[in-house]
Length: 329
Ligand code: F6P
Image 1 (spheres, protein in one colour):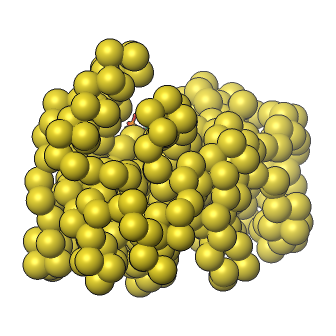
Image 2: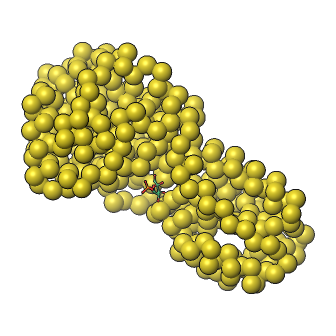
Image 3: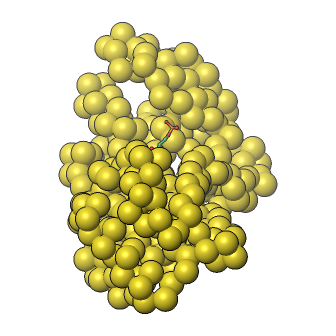
């Protein structure tokens, strides 16, 4: 499997962090060692490439991190790397260190930077999808998503206790700027009465009608899960005022879960996914691949060209919407 052109690789994490990034770095470093190639970590994503903020990594330097949330390499959104000068500096820094290839761990923005850089400087780059949003086309799951879901349902379960004690309606905002995966799945998992997602705008009338109906059916408290990117839910405080006006029998409260969703020890699922994708990224480089994301489709490892994933939208799972509608009645 040995690719004779690759002797040393660099790995970085970029964009919003996600639980399991450390497990992915660990797998990259250990497969690199397994294949007798050197590995360098880059601090603070692409900014560290521009500033030559590197650290040599060997299998022992990634011990005891599989269970840790966040990313020990740190993450950043680099303005410098968007410029031609910044990219030239980054390439020169890689060359100075004898680095032949790059593994980037992150989301859509991370892959966009990787693709531009790889094409401009003819350097092999492999992407590993890691974002709690699960909004990357071409892979069924992204690293961090499962952990975030578990964090969210734990929080909603707690809110349900107090909502039920006080006969209140809670609007709970979860992350997902462009995607409703967290809202839809956590909403079903936590038994929410309503779920608002950016992929399907049913309008406020539908929401009010549905809440009225469930109140009439005997429900005395309600949970509405709102993805932050949803059209009518974007201003959750305004929406809660509108609901309060229309449903005076409820006391409406708002909880924004925020960045708590990005932290915490990764779930077993995310640790295994991160380990598989980290190993696959180095395998892909050894097989001579470049400009691809490693992902999973129906449990199998797949390589997806950056051009086929960047900017792409995943299809909404209509079956899940139907399930949510039925089980929330
Ligand atoms: O990690 C993805 C995401 O959580 C989005 O859902 C959210 O809008 C965004 O990151 C916020 O990230 P930050 O606060 O780091 O800009």
